[in-house]
Image (cartoon, rainbow, N blue to C red):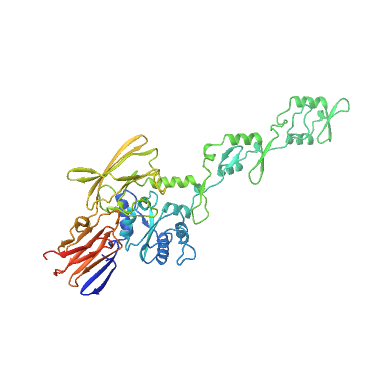
Length: 548
């Protein structure tokens, strides 16, 4: 267990400890712990990804070398890097992961500053509703985590899109429709149509000389006729005649009239004379054949896509929006339909939420840990929340938490919530080591569903002493842990940033922060000198070893 930053100095026989706030550190790998939480929520686990980790490390390094030395640590954006600053690795998360070799830019990023280990960083982010929803994303399945100094970055990605961008199948690639006389066809079908044009569909010009009544003649037939003209058709020198075969032959008028009146098979021109030029290389086809081909195209050849495409791969591939949406639906279906946090029967839940950027409760510096509901997009239809309540479980029964604020897509001050996300914020801190019952009534496609689940807040790790109700002198048993809790007030919603503990050198005092309202203290030694805790702007508290 790591200790907070303490400055020790000798002072007239007394030791003064200057406490600078830090969260208790627990050794843990971030991926293992985060997957424990996702498993509790009924979601697929994350897999480690090297490229996401590289990008997370580069950004964590950038944040750590450009941060302030003391809180508030960030005077720069947590997610947007500025070109020219030391450690620059890409403007936004998508650019950074692609620069690290990841296949696509469709990633999400969580960042925390000021935590010294992954577990406390994750707990802090899970108390922050927008960052919680990122960790509980329905589509992400791989992650890269990196800690540089006190700057920690989590990059969330999708392996299915990684594979798609690496080897996109033909069905995934966007292509423009072919306009077939107003009927949109796929390029594949139209290409097949061009390869299978039947001989009779190819456009042929009519013979330039028509029958006296205007009937058009077949060019192939007439070429043969002109080469081998029947003797009886030749003008004999008396009566009427027509000059045809490009003016080379005189044909008896009576014979030609009879021919045109009852033409032999193949003599008349059987096309309309109109044509369309299609395909590459260009082919002229009859208008009637092309119209029928467009009209009667099979369903599989018709272009039914929206025409919208997405470009998020490291390469310039244009991916059909519908194809990506189908992949996303498959990923959603791997998770529970309704994700609750804290999950059912959860323990060690922090009792408080302080802040995040952007802030969902800008008018509160401290509040209770939010309880959230997410409806999986795989659950289609209309979704509404009819009721959402929280109750403390006591020996006397249920005690309703009255001061709450329900956030949804309609009143979220930062417009981050979707219509499938709901969060109930207790406006006061929850109690330490206390069980709660959450009840929600959801309406899905008109049918109401009641959800009930319990969770228990964190044990502070020692006997709890509420300082606003304590005497000025508090007796402690040496060697035991105690949690000193100062409830939020209007003047002091959180404890001041520096708390001093002054004591005799014969005493050893371990002083750590549990959260921004609670200290953990343990004294060791047999001397009866008191330990004085000085809270700037607040009253002092004296701790005396028991038995003195």
